[in-house]
Image (tube, rainbow, N blue to C red):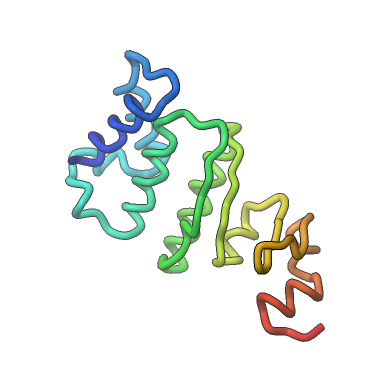
Length: 147
């Protein structure tokens, strides 16, 4: 399927209330995610960053209130990670809440307003991002730094 078809399927079958304006909605989503110029390409031939953009687009096509991201910056170059951060900012500016699980800390820190750090399934720290990263427990467990 093409990039557009992938997003259209999500809009028609994943949305709570699919509507007649699905085509227009898909174009808006593709524009937001930087894929509009690749709408007619086969999704299987996309680069890694464009496949991640397509995942954003398919999720956004369902008109979510909350977007869950899992390691979206993993495997990307520095430049591509910055592009993902810009996309996350643009999505957040539309009023969509974002829950982001990520190990690329600099990407997360660029947009996060609150961090929750887990270790072995238990809460290790929570709060303002810089304060959480300065926590002795977080530094010890995740960075191997004895405080």
